[in-house]
Image 1 (cartoon, one colour):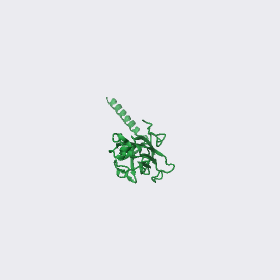
Image 2 (cartoon, rainbow, N blue to C red; image 1 turned 120 degrees about the vertical axis):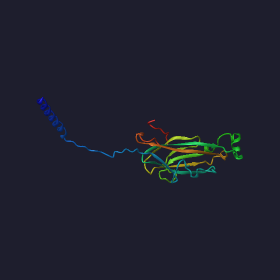
Image 3 (cartoon, rainbow, N blue to C red; image 1 turned 90 degrees about the vertical axis):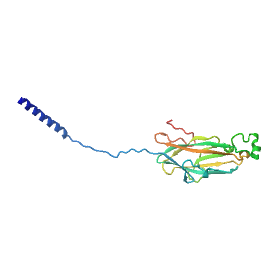
Image 4 (cartoon, rainbow, N blue to C red; image 1 turned 90 degrees about the horizontal axis):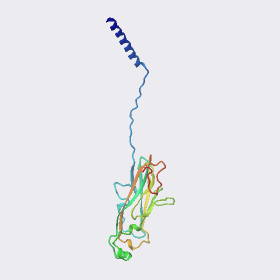
Length: 223
């Protein structure tokens, strides 16, 4: 019995030595902390005549363009800003209301029996043009090509407005309208209203060949 116990003791001591030996290899530990992932943002801001539009505020001052007559024209300078990230954008223009507002004698003479039986004619005759105003003077100079040019009949879009580089500089778009002097009495007392909507989406990982050209029908290659 004594011999067996001694033998077991020797084995136990040898095992203890072997276990201790495994902790003697070289080792090192490095720790990397502060690995934070933060999503970027694409935030569109619209400025009209230098003032940021809040909510669904109208682009034209006061939102009302009243007492329009043939030969009248006007416009507004709009600045589009995509905070932080480059984006591709498109515009939609929708017709919300279109009203004849009754008929006075000159309008009845121009339209005949159909006066008052259908929508108004003002939107059918008013011309609208959107362009990139590169120098911000509110005038469409030579070389500043149209993005959209059409009559405000039933809505336009989606029309690409091209790329909006990220940052505060943004891009300036001129919007002008005119009622030609050739328009007659059929537009008297008529009115219409519309909505101008701009949508932007991140450029990175969606448009490897660049944003759709401004003025073309909007297409997203991933859809």
